[in-house]
Length: 193
Ligand SMILES: C[C@H](O)[C@H](O)[C@H]1CNC2=NC(N)=NC(=O)C2=N1
Image (cartoon, rainbow, N blue to C red):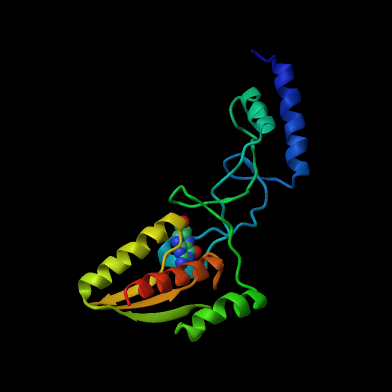
């Protein structure tokens, strides 16, 4: 359907008004983007200084139609919603554990031998397995879970020992993901006893 130049201008100006209402700002690429409040998990090497950037967008049918009508995207409003990771996975939004969750969910792990890391909101534990073979297969099992839930341990393996540290870099501290992973470590280790 060919839109007359006049119709295109009407859509474009209405779209511009809508984008302004949304508090959008024109990015250098000419695309409108709402202020991003999602902090993305930057690449592993600079997790310490995450940048407030988002790399995902949901285009509503309205904006898509408007974009099509105005020649493919100029002025297209980008709505930031979930965090699309560089891996293409959309990571479930996690938040740091609150005090009640720490009492209810973290304490049992501390009772099971996990300890708080000095200077970090993180927990750690050393697992001692029978030999390297058992240690590595143990790590392989955990690695599969890590990929499945998109949450990865910091670990060091030396022969039959595995030193594990858990924290959620995207939020700078402990989250439910760490609780889930620590409980998995415990379950798997108990199976070997
Ligand atoms: C890009 C990737 O999906 C994210 O960085 C994920 C990967 N695994 C992760 N693992 C941990 N421990 N913390 C994170 O914040 C995290 N974020």
